[in-house]
Image (cartoon, rainbow, N blue to C red; front, side, top):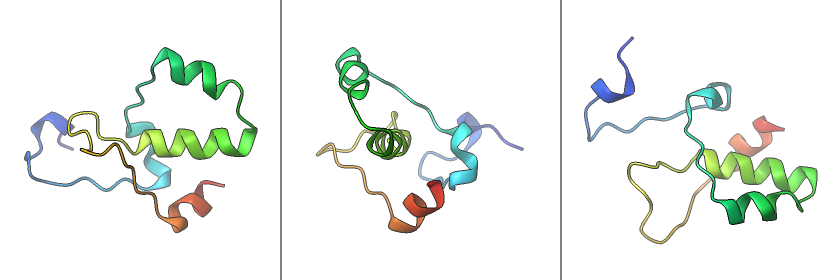
Length: 75
């Protein structure tokens, strides 16, 4: 199984909910402080959205798209 570093640069990687452990999670201190105040459902949705961010190719407008089906599978 090739590592992520060995994959082509232009190749897109689609991860399912079952592969959450393969995603990178990066947090800023301000996010950690505000996350502590969230309710449980909102916190889980936030964690899923943050895990979808590609840290090597950040979105230009800081928008993350998450499908309803993936969100429902997560819960």
